[in-house]
Length: 69
Image 1 (cartoon, rainbow, N blue to C red):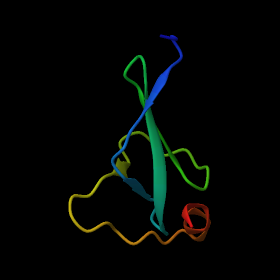
Image 2 (tube, rainbow, N blue to C red):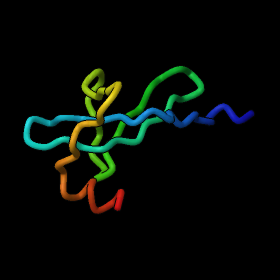
Image 3 (tube, rainbow, N blue to C red):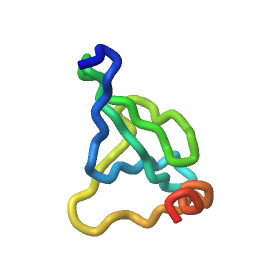
Image 4 (cartoon, one colour):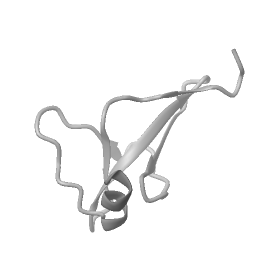
């Protein structure tokens, strides 16, 4: 196993920047650090991403929507 290997998180993750809600990608590094970024390539500040049980929030970022099709 490579020391730089990361593990992708499967649960949908979102970020609300105060203007729009973004869809996110996420990974946990082999050292346990969780990295989160938006589909439109913004870094998400630590502890600002969220998951939802039940109905997902409406993603309103046009760039994220374009990338997830």
